[in-house]
Length: 320
Ligand SMILES: *Cc1c(COP(=O)(O)O)cnc(C)c1O
Image 1 (cartoon, rainbow, N blue to C red):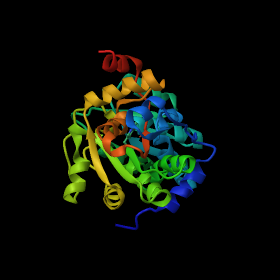
Image 2: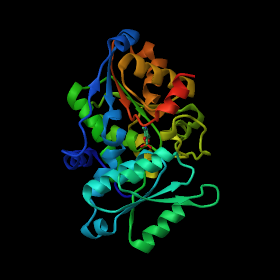
Image 3: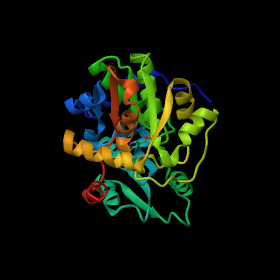
Image 4: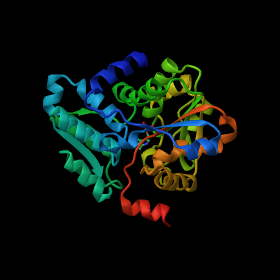
């Protein structure tokens, strides 16, 4: 593999994002501090543009396109936040975006992607291969494919959220970050090792899809079937080559949380902190709650990764 990205690349990403991405708020809660007997800081990327940190990585990657790449545009395949992040970033940078989405993706997500100006190509997830469709579109039209996590510019963009957190609150004893394919966790690792080197850094994934935990423990990337979980932002089948290399070097451990724990946290965020968090964004708080004893008296960071869950789904999960 070529050289891994470094914290300098995260700093360069932060410069590209300045004036385009929001500097999201860090919230605290007396209730949480009392529950933990600790000082807990929530970095709220549910207030990021398009509702999740994925804007950071997408905008950073697209900002680096050459004039020829810009003219032809970008292609991405995703049914979730990455699709919306690419579509919005492309619109802001004045380039065409093609997003390959399953035809049974939630209508709201397809509409949101179109609303950001993305050209949506639908496929049948049972009979067609989205990567093949993406590659064919890329070849036929000269488009540049941007993957959701295993790309240096994507993960360095994601790392700017935790950079902002440390710059605002100073060093921490422990930091909890959600884990899907590992773009957010590996970027966070670069910022953590530069700005708070002794901080324990935990990735948190759904218990039903603990491929990351198994990969870290076995030393090789473990592949699984698409896990059945409400944490749709972390329904990945494996870590990336680049993300795993960084995670393996810099991350303390990978923890898991159950769907029931995520639902509890969604309700807690809404009722006690007046903030709206999607299931995947609840992974870190759920795991920190399991470790309250260890966190006593410490300074703890929780990365809240996104807030894109429609009201009907929120109500059926939390109200049920
Ligand atoms: C994509 C996503 C994640 C997981 O990020 P990775 O970089 O794939 O590990 C977590 N939370 C939300 C809200 C997401 O959209």
